[in-house]
Length: 407
Image (tube, rainbow, N blue to C red):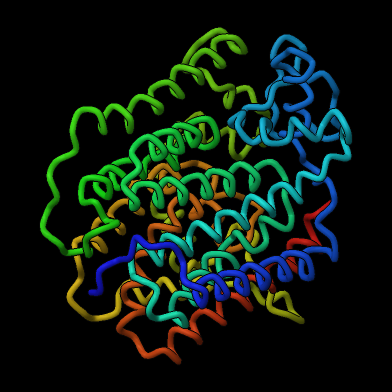
């Protein structure tokens, strides 16, 4: 495997990245709604930003739709991580409920696309531009990022923001920047903590000094105490902040408020019997992630609102299985994907309503990194076909979601 390059992008590399970003922007805008300057229906983080600006933790304005909010003592609380609300705070005093959270989310996703492409160049070197483009476009338009960034809403806003933070953390780790990695992982704690489970892989990247060594290179000298402190302390600080935030809202450092959310009788019965996380839910969730097909409604093929198989919506992932010598990097990336995905696979809720598998966004960058090494050895026409398949299916999913669930 070629050694990765630490130098800045050359002119051709920059031009490729610019074109990729333009394609992604066009897809978000054109397939989304012809505009990104709009507020989503469930703009919980906008309401939370407004609450922070009013010096309180419960909502200052009562939304028209308080779905998935916690009601405690007659007050409404947003249970999702607070960090995305901080990104909206500069706009809320000017635009109030009209704050374009969809635009903020699309720009966040675009930053993540830049970081993912930069990570690929860091790990692979800039040589094979076509395969790098395929991997980048799959991340942007062949996953739940495609419909999520253009639709917004609180669930997708939290997930995509956390995914982007994780990708930046991976890039920082691959570049040997321990403090930046620690800070970025700390922010994932305040956004969507399951994404933080990529921390061991980030630590391994830092210890291997991936910016100067190939995936199977001999180990670099172990990180010193200073580097470990830079990596770990920001995360511990974020955990402490979240605990204080929970204590101030619900009276307990470990209570994030999820059990205050109203749920339907079917979900309530499941949680009462098995808890929120259980091996009982693993077979059904695995079926959804790996095998669930779309439906035929009598006149057309339609997505299953419980989410379709990742192998149908993001077939580029199959390249991770391409026969070859599998490097240590690939094994660990896939193991990290499994670790990050485990809480979602054990969760009582499969993500309803969504396209593809939105919970898989938590670790999709890790799985795509592993698949990108298989793509180096697979025939380029096959890589391009799997990439195009994912993009087309993603566009189909966006149109379906926009028509039925945009509000």
